[in-house]
Image (cartoon, rainbow, N blue to C red; front, side, top):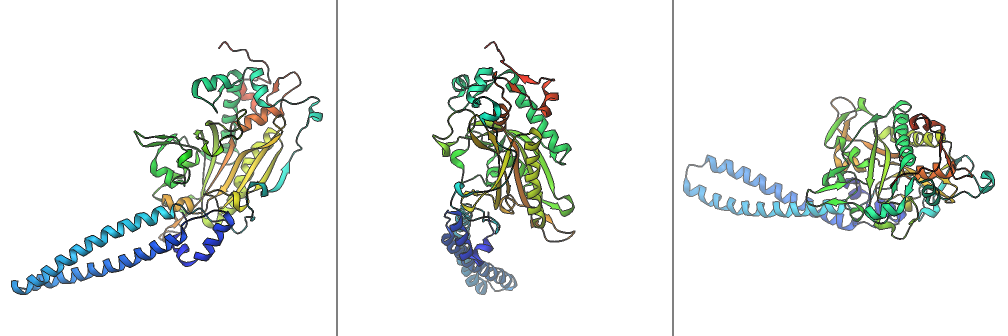
Length: 431
């Protein structure tokens, strides 16, 4: 969440930022609740002081007749204090819930725009392959995968319903090889520390990562145990250091994790229904950084480059777009998208979003650091980015490396993890 003091001191700037984001938040309600809270607290502290002074006086009185009126008066004060404490808790709760509805505010460098159609492509590496380059009409993955026997949509639907799929044989192995290679790449080349977190978390982790209340309709929830299935590895990694104070010398902390991700996709009804582009369960390699505020934007550029390195190593054309204000989402202060070209589908596919959330998540999860020994703790900045997300990376590999006979060349960097397999041909599985 954003700092209440900032809202209190700069309400017009906050409202202007929300206008640029093309969203709304209860700023006037927050200001009123904040005023009410301070008024109640002031009266409460005054009465508590009055009761403390009176208690000392009562203790010094020997005459019961003198003490009794003051005792009776303090009983009334006690009733008033109890009433104010209850009111204060109610206002605090309402204020907190209102603050949870305020999105992060955009960094000054974010372009102003209404929606994703205005996002700014800042660079592109590699030329998208066309049918002329292939020498044949490239197939989309939803045709190519089933023909190779590595993708099965019908059995996915039989097992779990729409937007699920089954992978077989060398398709499964290719994804497993890709995950392991990406993890090792980020660990060995970029210096990340691998973490293997739980895939279900407590509710407070969802609040800490900024997923609640905004995305509640898109999250799978085990009501009986009150555990939430993660929609991104960002959620558990954010909360690794919840309620902790780190030392400046520890920063930046750089983590990488492979996790499955679960999303109900209620916000995307009717979109991308073919293939594996938008599904309820998918895997992702997540990069995450805890940094100082002073270094966070330099670290964002580094995070972006780390994700692009995967695209470069796979030798698949990709481009980088900067999100405009209207497409930032709820949590990020600044965000880039990386898209790979999918020639069979004929589109650019987002395989990574790299975001600087500044102190938005850290303030929710109370993650702080000491700028120097003995200094007052401050909130860290948190950054996250896919490095990369599957299965869209799988789509890009299958469609870019396909051949005229319907086989798929395995990218060179993955072959050692594929047991030396260089070409995926028809994989006949006894099912």
